Image (cartoon, rainbow, N blue to C red; front, side, top):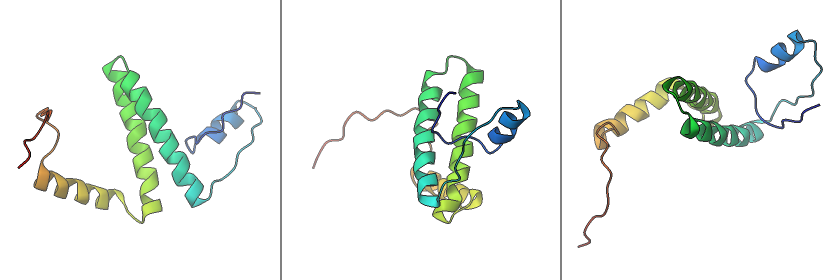
Length: 108
């Protein structure tokens, strides 16, 4: 029996049951949930970095976004609040669209 010890999507238990397989699972406390989301974010980021096609890249970006949405309630926030903060930062400092890569800035 393979051992996973990792956060999985909410539909995975039903998928395993549909295959008539047995499994062991825990429901995490909020602090553990946040820690496992951070671990999963790292895993999904690596998968995005290793994606070799646009389709794979978009799949991994969707996983990253799902994890970001999942962690928001643990920080007393929402998708709407996240978007508000994102837009405020974009207004103040810009986005990442132009590909600027800063090398150095002269000290005074």
